[in-house]
Length: 324
Image (cartoon, rainbow, N blue to C red; front, top):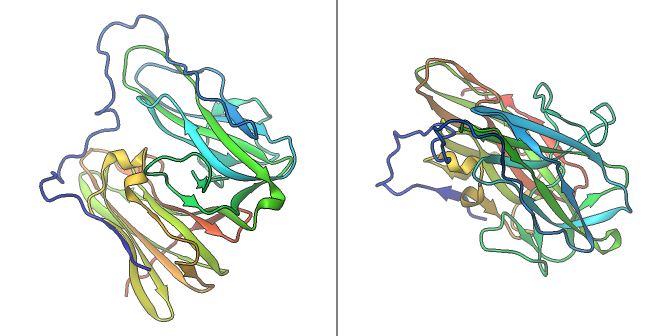
């Protein structure tokens, strides 16, 4: 099992850190009224489900996190593909998360709250034999799949930035493809860990945290997540008294926030086994050129992946790493 490393070419500038909106279409003219950018997304497969939001209104010059709630009503199934669709020019992410009975009722669309983090239900995944494309985050053999149970509450979390003078009308869809639960021989679930950044104004800072595995798992994918102020992201694996680097992105780019495919490491079944007691140490480094301190959720330091065998997501709140 080798480590994943991503290093930008030496010709790439490392001192340029665009703001979130730098690469987005900008309209500096007078507002002309709402711009309807809603899309007619592809239908879900016949043996699947589409979660489609109503129109979402993004005010001029704003950054908005919408949370759209619902409940799965159907038999227990295996999820063998997940596709996320959004208005790409203005969307930063669209995720399917687990919700609880205490969350807003089905059909509600509310601003997302970040006092408590929710578990990701499924990472993007394609099972062999289903439709895929180059660069998919994770492709697995038949027999693998995520479990979706009758009555599972979900929340579609979507993040939009509008750098224009117009109100934007947008929509999102997540398409899921199912197989009968009895066809799944290897259940998979999302793995996530996170640490809280604190980057003082006009400074460079790092945050390093540990997560200890409590059970044995097969690790199938990994990718880091930061925002536009990120510099570098690394993960070290300590097992059997040995520490080795398994993931490294030495020149973080803002576009990885929305599309982590270029910095995603995927592993074949059986290639990467973690055991109870193993430790992942994640470190993020940022440069803050602004006059304001930067904290969560403006910046993040989270590690994401897929594990097996597991039917429920695993979320680790990292423990600050003790300096030797």
